[in-house]
Figure 1 (tube, one colour):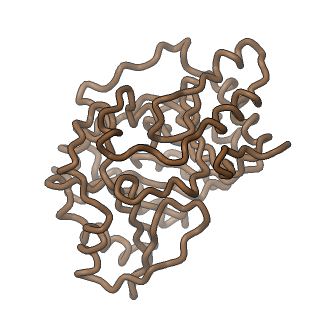
Figure 2 (cartoon, one colour; figure 1 turned 90 degrees about the horizontal axis):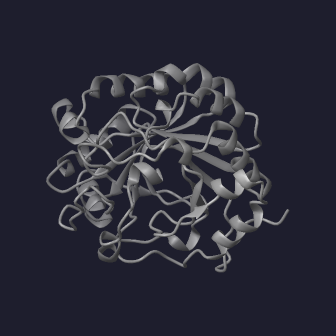
Length: 321
């Protein structure tokens, strides 16, 4: 079956699946303090429906699947989903806040899921509670150590925000000295509920500068379609990376599709448009032409940061990053 191409010649073989809109944290850059309105149960896909959609994407050439949320590990049937995905001919990966990951280490080892990204924005317990509006810092750090001890490939994702945690850039880099992890610095992006302000955004160049003032950065070669610019530091067990979603676009090599918990797909993280697959699936329609049309409609690149800040209805916990 032909692969999924857009009109700009980009092949799409990487599917990010948001298993749930729910999360056990309330990070202020992701959602309001009182959470976000959740979709009615009948508007969400069942385990069987999500798996059916995923299988269609696999038939269309998807070779990598990343499970996201919300927080994916709070979904009740998540272990069943992982076991089913472990039988598909794809590379599996997970993005999590790390609070519950220790419960699934044996399962992940059994199904061959080795790539785990942990979202962590501070190394200070009190600041963790301020950012996430919840306790749990010690649990996250212990679970990261368990993942490393079990030889998972761990990436730590830090959203850098001026006046919030930008004083910890070097502290995070030191984690890569002590552990074989990749520390990734991510520019603060505008989403509903996070009161985005360009003055809070620390651009990639500033992050690089803060690191270069302290370390000798050796530029690494990046994989095709990689959104991260990687650097090694002599003497470090791990490495660092910078994701410049706002200041330095990487749209030209994008190969990502996003499947939401409600059965919608988005062809861009910053797209205002969502293509419904749940309704045609329940009617018994063929999803292939709908998916192909959505990918063909993908824009060459997203808008600028100020235009993105004014777009409504874009909640990170729903899209899944």
